[in-house]
Image (cartoon, rainbow, N blue to C red):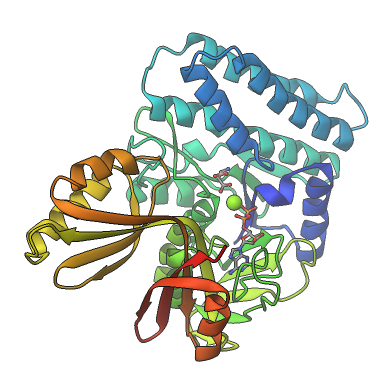
Length: 419
Ligand code: ADP
Ligand code: ASP
Ligand code: MG
């Protein structure tokens, strides 16, 4: 069996969905399971709905209507006949969402989040499945919540591998095109859970592992894994082959083309992962598998913007030792601040962090009681795997370098734009 994953960008409009059909015609669809994300930016739009819901905002209804309108336009572009069953089916899903919002009593934000965002994937797969049938490809729509079982950590659920393995290997039909949702799972009580933002790649990895699949292909708007994000580097080049380990490193440092959790299950069973262009599906793309680390051997660049560089030093010139460091990390964890780089000397300790939830001021107040705290906002963290002098120069050009750290294969540079 082959597992294909189509992300939000590939199904963002009617042309995207028609293109999925074309891709399947070209590469075959027997004995395949399609894992599909919500269309375009639907998950972000549903996050706005959730915010409006908890804020008791007057915009709640209009934020739902906007998402409805977006999907309805796609349906009108795909199906000529407004009496086609898909219109009623999608409408029923929106009614279910509205019913939930009107009747929910749970004050648990994360729980509500998962029950609501999941409609993105449930609706996209419903539309895709109807469209494939309409074009003559017989499909089996699967509710992924009957297959992927998780704990009840809403928004970041942990997979129960044993239960999931059993359900998938027993119940996924073969010799047909299956369509299911990425990103979602269900807990013990059958409430919907999610695997973390961008988690659909991971879903593909889970199915592949449990099915002993022949391969996984994630279809992207780029030719494959490149040595840098082409949005930020004009000269980004395609990598033909990378090892699981290299892919894990790239994803870990922030190459957003593959979700970091996807690779481990595949590596365990040596299932190859292809990253290919949904625009040119017959091109080779990138193969992630056992074998050479990187081919060709280009330096690889990863950029993280809007970082915060914090330096802590002891007020009394005492050393920063294990107990301070563990306390500092405990606080970062508590304030949900993600640490991307660490450097320490005898009396100072620097970290480059991401403050996604805007908690730094609160944390700073606590840290300042014990340490001298200095920080630079809005800095950029560059990671260069397999760095060369020339690669470092490109990054440093016209920028102020605030910190640099070098290990055998990886160079990290924190910079500030010169005004
Ligand atoms: P999906 O629709 O599957 O969610 P994403 O938008 O998450 O797809 O991922 C594809 C994007 O990842 C590309 O458009 C590209 O801008 C970005 N990207 C980041 N790093 C890389 C890289 N090293 N190689 C290719 N693309 C990358
Ligand atoms: N739709 C989800 C998200 O946008 C999952 C995914 O696309 O991978 O995060
Ligand atoms: Mg994505």
